[in-house]
Image 1 (cartoon, rainbow, N blue to C red):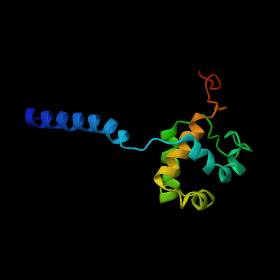
Image 2 (image 1 turned 90 degrees about the vertical axis):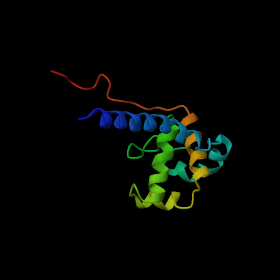
Image 3 (image 1 turned 180 degrees about the vertical axis):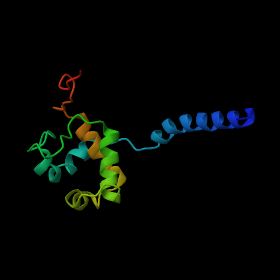
Image 4 (image 1 turned 135 degrees about the vertical axis):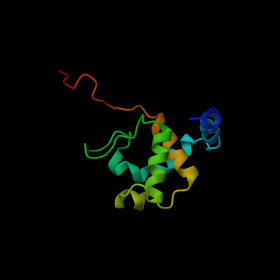
Length: 121
């Protein structure tokens, strides 16, 4: 590899690293009260407290807002395929999604992970 190629590659990488936080700065922050008003249809599966009504449904409370927003957007836009979720999110605006994500992210979660459960040799 020549020096010019290396410099151009590093410059592109630096621009990408700078662009990521800038892009997220343009996302409208979610409104908790608006999210709360939008949440009742979600409660049948995900629970009134966001911690799911049965083990087959994901717990939303305490998840990262950006993760929730991305998931809802992907269900709405077809990036994730689930007929049930698609029906619930098809008419949500980008702001509605941000509001729901903020609402569930702010709730106390009962999330769990595999820490201490994995057997290692």
